Structures are given as C-alpha cells and as structure tokens.
Amino acid sequence: MDAAADLFKILGSSSRLLLLHLLASEPCGVGALVERSEMSQPLVSQHLRTLRQSGIVTVVRTGREALYHLADHHIAHVIDDAVTHVLEEKTLDKGEIDEHD
Image 1 (cartoon, rainbow, N blue to C red):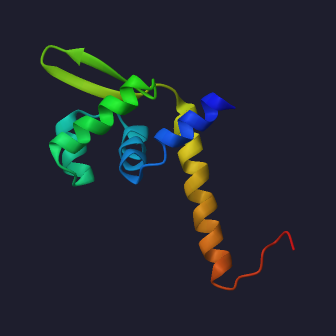
Image 2: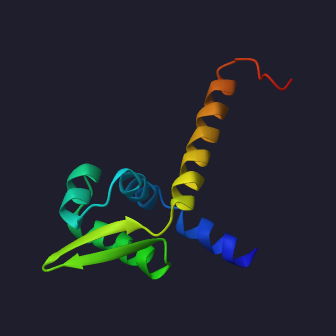
C-alpha cells in the first residue's frame, strides 16, 4: 500500500499527468513535450526528472537526442481510468441519472 500511495503522490500533479498523457500516445523528446504541454522547458525537465527517478518513465538516448517513454502501459491505464472517473462524476453532477441507481 505504501508503494501505491507513493505512486499517487507523484501522479498528484496535473502537470505530470499531462506529460504522462502525452507520452502515452508516443515517446517524445523534451522539445516536443514543451511545445505540446505549453510548459516551460525547465518545468518539463523538472517533472521528467521526478518521473524518471520514480521509474514511471524511461529515457532512451540516441546520440544527442533523448526520447522519453512510459515505463509500462499500466500507468496509462491508471491515468485514463482517473480521467474517465472524473468525467463521469461531472456528468452525474449535471443531473443525469446514474445507471447503477
């Protein structure tokens, strides 16, 4: 449980979630992540360092280029499930009926 709680602490940043969402679709370099996330390069690098140190992302270097990848597909599923859950809650908050009721 402690390891899972630590994972959720790392995933508790909307900026890191966005970067992971982008990496779930394809491996990216820092420049592409800066452009797509609209975050500054130092901020993207800081978050990638945290994600790399925690083992959530890996980096493959080819010459001067470094591509970041999700370490495994489970992270993408956790993020997708969380986003789906939040969107379902928003739909329910708008007055729609829950099928489980």
